[in-house]
Image 1 (tube, rainbow, N blue to C red):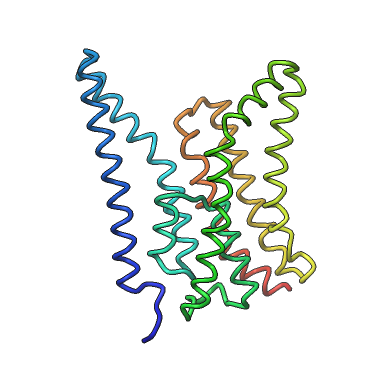
Image 2 (cartoon, rainbow, N blue to C red; image 1 turned 60 degrees about the vertical axis):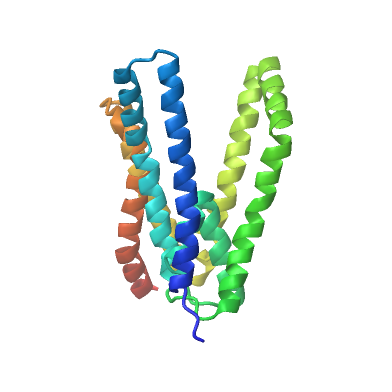
Length: 243
């Protein structure tokens, strides 16, 4: 039996899980509306809240869609769709998948050809994110108390501490961008693509701050991702020929 990352069985499993998640969302939406009516909140306020919340989720949904497309190039559509619809983010899923694929020796421009390789990638992506879930489940309150205590005791050092945590997280991903710079001009392609994304984010920041285009705050991330993805094609071709 030939293996396919887009097999109908994977679509069926993914559909069942996503339908369950959607059912949960509808369940809590109905409960929330009923509770709002019990509290004598007007129907106008309820409708406005539902509409504004729906619009607010459009930007993150667009970023998730882009992430699914990025991973579907070698993992097919069902598995990335499942991962990013339930739990996951491109900042974790893509490095985990590509690192495993590179370790196995797979070509990321082609679909994974056999079940063993696909299973290895899926297990790494799944097991790698479980510690974070457990940490949040059992340690979030203690972590929050520690952060609040630090920030209330010395606001300056509290801010520095939080900024340091964020920069440490970003540094881990920046390492992936510069991983292949020793391989010639083509190895600088990720750096060039990251620069395009950073430039777009800077432009969005200026438009938000100086021109007061506040709605752009929710769409800056997906727009920068789209710009970087579009720029990656000509940049890869040009830098590959130069190299």
